[in-house]
Length: 492
Image 1: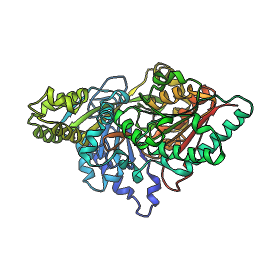
Image 2: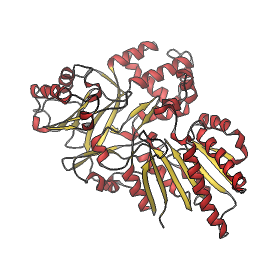
Image 3: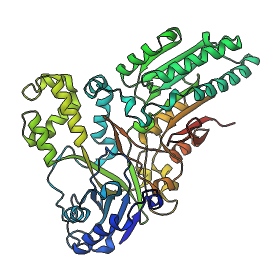
């Protein structure tokens, strides 16, 4: 039996984790079970997101062939290995041994499954995520707060004035150099992906205008700032925020995973692509290297039986009707749901309450399924899994995000850049493979959306293959926090 205790730094924290209390009850449950202990691994994480998709104890089959096995059964019956996952943060709040014993018996309770097994990026949690952004106005009305308030610190680092000033000064230096050789185009294009409530754009535009006026320049007149977002509601709010700069700003609704689809007319023309807290909210698979073999992490979303019953009662339905009602919600949205199922949803408020409650109860079951070959696995349409090989085979066992949506968005965005342009992104980046071996990196829940850390080494590899240097550093303008700044520009 292998025990992997990942939050080791917390053993020496001000309030240290009790290692014995976190592990011993689970080991005792394993000893009393029928499992072959040589085929079991216990993985302990500190799940820092208080809202997440995990139970305190989960059993994850490690399949010997694709598609075999669904729930834990005694070792004498099944040939696959098993991973027992423990959330150390919540472990002290429950009877851990009893939970582990029930989990090992396959007795974690009846579940209302919302989908079949599949890789994470295709799961219905991402349909929930998309619904959040398309119906954000309804969610915010029900919650009584804007989505940015759900971020750590209650706001995005993108609106930091010192950060904006540094970016603008760098732009001016580049433009001055190009202008001196008559190589500067008339239109100076800046693109922001994921504009939030528009405060970052306002900080940038206010400071840009002030700095240009102080220099006696003409750059502000020539500036074309494109605010891009998946949500029209977000763009409308952002437009109001930057109304003072209306002559310099345009809005574009787009899918962040395919920016070239909407912005292809700007290929090789953009001097700055600015991204903040977007990549961590894009669909992703996870892969793992266990015992020298590569696996895809398959998931299926479910509601615990008690949660499904509560949800059913709230809309005059039966528990077995809940999965179909959830899928109808995801397909139609809250407003059309009232027309499609009026007996259950007499008004929009009822539909939104159902949506919010379903999201809070949503859980993910996981298993490891062998990948036939990395060359047969598609990270995106442009890159296959061979890009992951050096990361997966870098040492000890590891599980990591593929960041499929982020890779697609990043690769597309690089094609927008002028030869002297830059992409700057503030986000939750894992900057080295060891970061995945030492800490839980998501998924977690931010209000109604998903958050995952982003695979920085993979994005750097993709950038290099496209001829760009990619650099990571901690966000300069805040002493605490996890935000990392990624900068990409064409290699000299």
